Length: 140
Image (cartoon, rainbow, N blue to C red; front, side):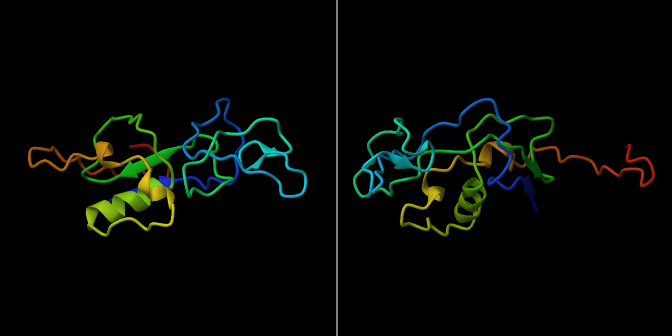
């Protein structure tokens, strides 16, 4: 079993660092002819590059970084993973774990970072002991 806790990525413009550009885009507004990509906005002089052949315009990269937590007896204990992940990394984990294949049609699961580094599925893995919190104080 694994419980994945992550935030909704549509809010929280609180990060001081821009995420990496992972999908190139050079979308143009059909009326004004100005750049109109999803990252830099309409009319901005900036754009995020030339898209790959057949790629969707308007999807440049990630939004703000967000907390991502994995709770499992198989999760690495006291471990901070620095792998670049996003919400579609959860979908990728499910696809990989059950050998389902990718969604296709330029879904971001194909380029999402893997969650596998957060787990240790080896037989020698020492499973974490049960942690029971005090229902009154919340301490352990």
